[in-house]
Structure formats: C-alpha cells, structure tokens
Image (cartoon, rainbow, N blue to C red):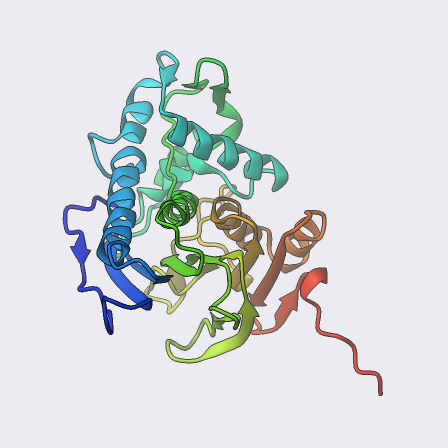
Length: 327
C-alpha cells in the first residue's frame, strides 16, 4: 500500500440533491480506485458520507502502509524484533485476522512475505536474483510474529522480518467504510477498493450485479452474479505484472515458500460476510491452487469461491455449484 498524498475526490454525481437519490463517489487511495454508490434520502448526507469514507481510507493508510516511513506498520517493522511494540486496536485486528488466515491455509497466506516482496519492482520490471530470494526467504515465517491480545503488542522472534498488509488491509478499510456509511443512515450501498467490495443491502428491490473479470480481458466478464449483503474479493495475476524476457508473466502474488509468482491460477474470487476475511482468503486460495483452495473453502461456513485456473477452467465451491441438468 502506498501513501494517499495524491488522494483525489471526484465530484459527487447527484441528479437532484433535494430528493432521495443514488449518489456516486470515486477517488484514489492506496494507489487503488475507490468507488462507492449509495442511496440517501437526507440531502445533508449526500456529500458528507463519501468524503468521510475517503478520509477513513487515508487514516488506515497512515497506519498500515509499509511504504510510509511514518506509518504505524513501519514502526512495527523497525522495532518489533527488539521489543514488543504496542499498536492500535485497528492494526491489531488486521494482524490477528492475517495470522488466522495463515493458520487456516498452512502458511499459503503470510504477511511476512514483505521480506521478499520489496525485491520486486513492477514499474521497472525488476525481479530478484536467486541469491536475493534466498536471503529474503530466510525471514518469511508467520509463526515468528507473536501477538499479545491483552497488551495489544506485536513482537518478532526473528530479525529482519518485514510485514506487508497489502493482501488484507484494503478489505479491512472496505468493512470500516461500510460502517461509516451505516452511521449516516445509509442502508443500500456498494463500496469497492480495487479487488475488494462490500454490498450493503440490495439495490432497492433488485440485486447488485457483480462481474468476475475474465483474467485475460479488460472488457469481458467470465461470469456475473446477482448479489446482496455480501463481501467479494478477487485476486488476479493481471492486477500488477510484467512479462519477462522469456514472455513469462511475473505478477505480485508470491508464494511464501519460493518467493516467486504463483502459477496454476489466473484469478480467485471469494464471497463471505466481511471483506477483511475475503481479502486474505483470496490470496491464500490463489497460492494454494484450485484443488487445495477449494478444499479449504468448502470447510469454512459462509464462504464461497470461484477459481479460474491457468487452463481457463472455472471451478466453484460447493455453495456455488450450478445445479445439475435433470435431463
């Protein structure tokens, strides 16, 4: 996640501010497009709600970005190997969920991958050497992160650990953004931050229509789903990538075991009650692959998945399996 110095608030699109209307707000946060649409019958809420959500994203970025030297997370990365570091309730919540997903996925999701992730630069098409990877992988181990729930502290058992919350913090921000909208009395809304989305209620009597992008097309969807009151997170190999000299796709979803981009899957979409959970699980399932990923999802209550593998086959968790033909 990067800083929000360039935060942009785009004009609210309101047909008539004196009547109940759908309001659309968009901006940029964490180098990610933020889009929201909500229904309000209170003219005073039209502008305030969207601005409050974008301000929330800014606060969370100041806490959880590893790219900002003054962030709370950067302070943890600098100090936690020496002594336990006390952190805010919000950061502690995200760290707890991150470690829970790490345990569920047996390490497929691992926020200590920051020790390797910083070696890649997708703007300059740089990837690490084998020597650099070996050095970074020596400190990738979620079990070296110790949380104390009573003291709200974080401690590293190993020097050199670097946490990166890029695979889970946006989901947390989306959840809290929905809480902000609720505080304004809003009951019908869609809020998305890149690949993470929360739907609040339905679209006033109709479902929200959510598309799962075709990983090899910017314009086409692989499928669409009518949804309401749900979180949806997608991780794909098309989000940040470059092609190396051999034409191989080098993308940002790295295996904690090898430090290299995961192969075998093109995209994973997770559905659940909250975006904090679906965000972390979308990365975990991507790393696990279709078979192991679906096995994990099918063990979890209230969670479903759509996986598109590298052969462009679509796999569904049990809760989303299309009905069998009766013929």
